[in-house]
Image (cartoon, rainbow, N blue to C red):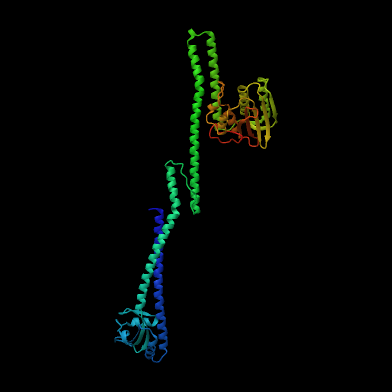
Length: 470
């Protein structure tokens, strides 16, 4: 049985019981009121005639002011009651009242069940004679039965109408609950695209709708995040396999060449050994980068200390100047410190200048700016190299999932430099942004907090931290 039907049945039962009780109470009250009026009239008549020397004559004289159902009897001990009236009211009183009934009728009205029930009082005349009179209550009884039946019909009608109204209201009020149940079933079946409107007129149900809708939205977000993470991991592993396949293929080819020692000249053997060594180092760097990315994605930087970020940037800029003497380098760098892991900051800045050295011509200009903006240290490095394609910058702006898309033509690069740079910045509570440089190449901006250096932002993947400046 549904909740709406249960509510309707219980409410209808309550209405039926309540209206029936009121109907019976009203009918009984009306009957008792009519009987009380008869009793008061009879008591008043008995009081009047009891003060007269001739009570019977006084009673007969008062007959004109009585009702048509009035009865009066003279009762003598040992004889049948004598009717003092003529007509229908002169019918014999059967059975004859007992002495106990006569005594009781002196104290309070008495109902005698003769052919037609009457409500009588008694007056002791002495010499074992009694005067008993009163009114018939047959009409009162008939009116009581009619009113009881009428009230019962009204109670039944109220029960039907009230039950119908309650059923309609219950069904309308519980419709939001039914929609919640249907919504939950769709979600349980795996349909996370469904939605639930928060439109119930009831505050409690509306709060329930909002809570369930919010919970499902959280489930959707978690499912989407998991799907993205799984997709990112699959693509990441595919790129790792691709990056490892190339040096492994080269190593295997030169190893096979070295295996044919009888046909290999010394120069070819030396070249093969050098190539195997370079490819091995390349694989080692790739594995080191992957391990660093994994470590930064799961824990906060350890061994933090006060680091002068300006000195580190200027030190690596001097290294670049030594490697490329003909490269113009313009520097505007303030000296200030923040709390960070020195090794990771060194690695981040080194990656930036290493990329410039390896991927830009040695004569292209570089501009370095270090400044403090509010509670953050901003490090901006512009180069005049070839930069990145617009599609690559767009991928960075949306959070790339495949580092292979950003690999350069340098066969010794691992393709993880930008991701390492951004991940290190984010592990310190900052961020890295990549935009076209005003010098024509790539502009890298690293923003690190000074006041809250150890706050690490949550990441959903190794590439989510990359953004662009509009």
